[in-house]
Image (cartoon, rainbow, N blue to C red):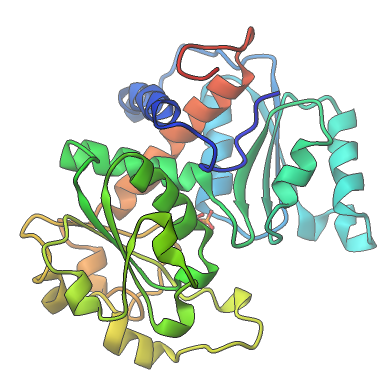
Length: 309
Ligand code: CP
């Protein structure tokens, strides 16, 4: 089976194919009356070992809008709490004859591990610090719809880059699609060698913002810091918080993005999050369309659709 474990390994034409497929669902989603139940008869299992609002609900809504039966497994309420291993949990879901399994897990690589064990497509809904591919796809779709194109856009990704799977997947997708990507973080939250991913690192946010077309803010992932250096919220806001004054340094029509959940007043001020230039709620909307496209493409039979070999 073909899985979606990450953006890594996807060719630019495959990313563009998924964006085009997702774009095709946006208008229908706004009516919520989708007659096309192409996933009818399929069972989708969302297995979430970490908390989620946007990703879990949008995969559920995406599956249901296209006619799939969707069931959700929350690890906190499951037999994982009784000591069942990840592999045994995956084999249990597989024995129920799922047609697709969506997994969020706190360990990088957990999704790949499960993909190798089960008999259906597996979609990564975020694994540790590794990847969050559908987030990168919905971000790319948002940028393409709001800015007209991705190639040549100057995108600044600022925040806790060290722990962010969102940043990693976005860097892979946006550089593959020829955007100019700048990354900005305190030195302690900047992954070593990140420039090898084809991005320009900055520790000075004001400099990074110069002429930016898109400013993507990330929250401090304190749940992944494991006792390492954690800047205080006040400190972080002072040097890296996106304020209206700072946004002035970006292009006059720059787009503001955030994958959520936001910590208002820390990485982003409320008046920026709610600004006309903010695409934050549109990102959520694109998330449903992207997940419809991914579920559809990965469960298509026969496989080998044009653009997705
Ligand atoms: N952006 C994102 O993954 O949000 P959730 O954690 O709420 O799913």
